[in-house]
Length: 363
DNA sequence: GACCCGTGGCT
DNA sequence: TAGCCAAGGGT
Figure 1: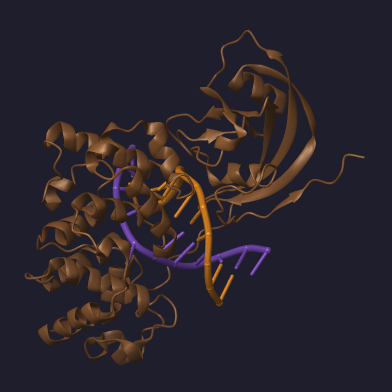
Figure 2: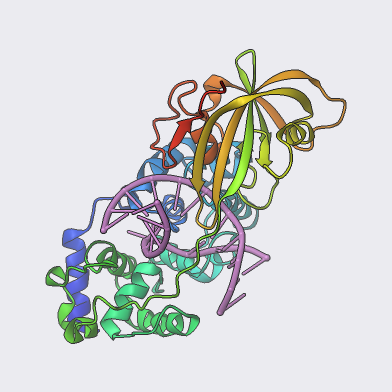
């Protein structure tokens, strides 16, 4: 991409960029928060979480001092919860190792948990003006088309694009430049049906010249869908409180609060006893719902259960009798919100993906 | 390189 | 519907 095209792209960005909340600040912490939230997550989804997060944790010190419970609760609904735990750990590391100030270079940022090559480059260039590239999915697509690279995504392709991105990045405005490439990918150079007629660098684009814009980037082989796992959960309610158990520190939905239960290869009453240390009488199936993760599917069944007594055995997990009114603000993943939704009113007004249906009556 | 890790919108 | 995809990182 020649200098004239790069100049056009930068001017296009400054004229046409979307007004996003993290573009109104120069605070490195706020920009870091936005970049981590934006990992594998759409802009429209991030905006309300970002604004709520900054009200709750307005600066790095506030985040570092927060309990993990609050951090996960604020992230609940965004997914990829390890991001929240890593961001929390990064804030604490900055307090401990950098006197509370985010390091200003990509190389140093890269050392913090949850900050990889992309996020380090993005924060260093946008917040600190360091002349470093950042390569995300948008940049891969845009660069592949401009350079006419017809190979599917791979480490070799990434290296090639890293080199190009390094050569392209503006010395004067690295942050604007990096955002310009991503903005182009997000709004014009889209995965399907790119709007080449509106592209400020169409004249410098190999794909456009050769008619390859619809076949670049090349498809990687599709993953085969996995069968749904049957999951059962129990809603045990006592005096306006629901019994929750905390997930283990690693794995799917790590550290999040769940209704007791799990894969239905183990009897539900036993799961409840082992996890929560209580014995219950199970009622009929009250609700069924499917939940789709990125790599697996749950076919869930919810049963009401009545508490019989507290077992003498230690519960296998941390437990919490959560007031029904507090469920909204708790660190509950979307799958649990689907099961609990509308039994006591809507949860935080969030849209729900998985469709749930009442179970057929027991009669 | 392969796999794990959420969610929601779109086709 | 089923698949695809979105400002990735860790192991």
